[in-house]
Length: 236
Image (cartoon, rainbow, N blue to C red; front, side, top):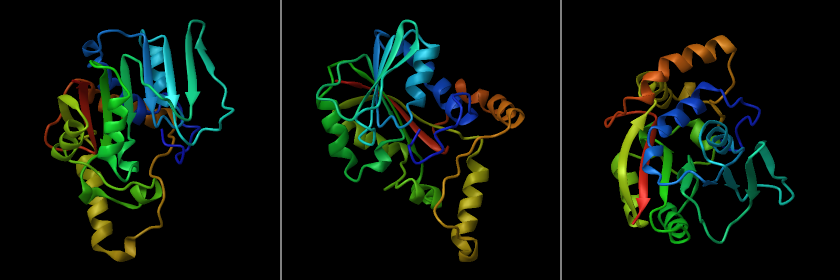
C-alpha cells in the first residue's frame, strides 16, 4: 500500500486481499518459498499477507520513504519482516513490485536496475494501474506518471531483462462502473475534483460483500480489460 493512502486500512480490506489472492495461484512458479522482497512496499501490507498466509518465512520491505529507525517485526514466532530504505542486492525467491512502476518517471531504467541486482530465475509479481484514459484525480494524488496497457507493461518488462510468463487484467468487474465515472468527470469540467485518494476502509458487511463478489477474480483472469494490469515474470 502506498504511504499516501490510509495506512490504517486492514489486511482484510477486499481490494488488497483480492489482489493478493489473484497472485497466489502463481506461487507454484516460484521454485522456493523462503524469502521475498517487497520493493516500494509502503505500509508492507502485501509482505504481511504473504508471510501470514503462505510458507514464506522472511520478507524484506524496501521503501525510500521509510524512517531509517523503523523497527523489524516478528509477524509470527518463526516469520520476520524487515524494513530497508535501500538494498544493494535482491537475493530472494520472489520480488514484489506492487503498484510501484507508475510512480517512477523512468520506469524502464528503474526496473532494469532492480533486475540487474537480482539472481537468475527470480520470479517477479508486478501490478500497475491500467489504461491511461482512466487517469484521474486519484492518480494525481498518488503522484502517478502513467497507467499501463498489457502491451506497454510487456515492453517495460522485456526491456528490463525479464521473461513475461503471464500478463492480464484484474478488477474487471468494477471496470465498467469506474470507467464510466471517470469519463464523465473528464467530459464535464464542473465535476472535476481536487486530487484525492479513492481508497477507503468499509464496514465489515460491505467489505464481506465486495470480497465475495470479487472471488471470481481469484480464478479467472481477463486479457482484455480491468483496473489493474498484472505481470508474472522471471529473470532470464
